[in-house]
Image (cartoon, rainbow, N blue to C red; front, side):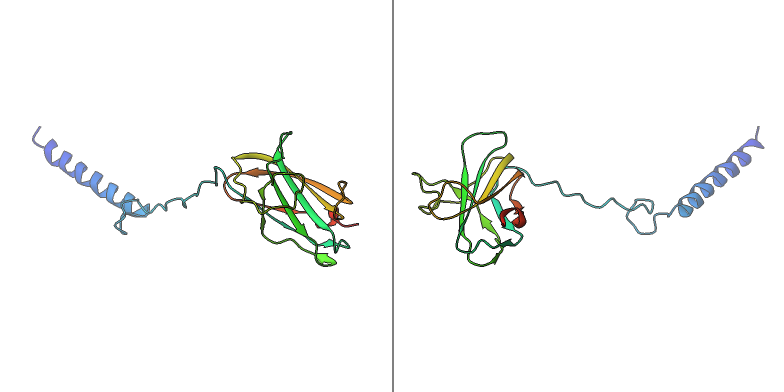
Length: 164
């Protein structure tokens, strides 16, 4: 039985050596990080959420100089108009850039009164954009777009759909 103690001691030492070598072969702990050489996954930022504004831009709207671009927003699937954008088209190749939708003014003039920027609850909204001759109620060209608000939201109108 006394001859087993040195043998067990030798096996224990071999096992410790094997563990140490295995650790070194797998990257070891030489960086002091204690992660066995493994790299951490990159941080993933969560998508934006919550209420926010809708900021609009467009590709070029051609041939509509002197007219008005009106955009209205309502909850997807129907409901009351919640916001509007009224912008004069000032050139033959007009591009909208970074315009924030604002509350619908009281009365019948969608371009009247300055109103505050609209804060939309998180969710889907239908935007209807049209090119109008001043005083007309029927657009000469129109396009629709559905946007999902999750925090601050940007959307781009298709200018070719608003061009003649």
